[in-house]
Amino acid sequence: MAKQEKYAKLCKEKMAEEIASRIVEHPNFVITTFMGSSTADLEVLRKSLKRASSSYFVVKNSTLKAVFDKVKLPDESAKIDGGMGLSFSGDDIIATCKALQSFANTHDKFKIKGAVVDGKSIPPDRVKMLASLPSREVLLARAFAGMKSPITGFVNVLSGVIRKFVYVLDAVKTSKQNTA
Image (cartoon, rainbow, N blue to C red; front, side, top):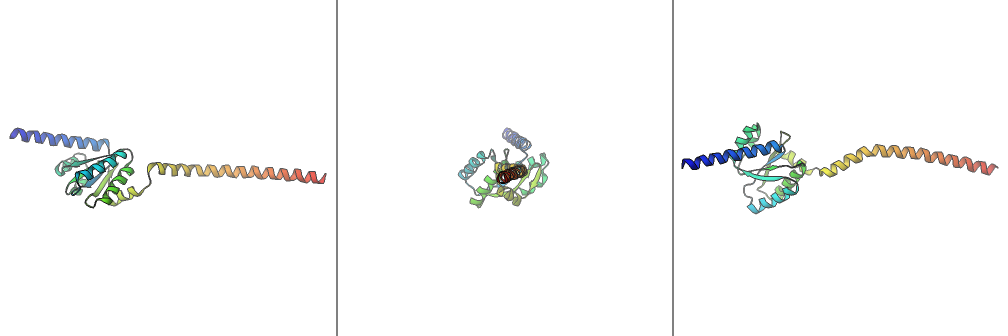
């Protein structure tokens, strides 16, 4: 029996190390509770997160508390209540928040408890706000349009000046032809 306990402890330590290394590799993650959600529902969630280059893991509470203490996120330990899961974000935390919020809207028992973005704790209402933002591509397009707008206006002003100059020259030419 002592051998099994030794292996169980080693397994828990390895799991904690794996989760801690993922937190270090992916500093953006969302903390959720999933109690009452079926395995099939969680698979649907995982598939939608995969499209957002994200992943979802179910974690034991004791292991999660140990990990948060190890990576110096003690404030997150207060969010641990019931069955917990972590969603590690890929490049786009907004896409991850959108997928999780969409799932939470259709599954009452699935709750977003908060997130950590670049090492800073984010409350659930902020995660909801992030989910309401447009996608990364739309934000980049808007930024580019904002940078392009003054240049386009300047070109239009210059072309207007040149156009009016040509009209004046044409009017002078026409008036000289009429007087001659």
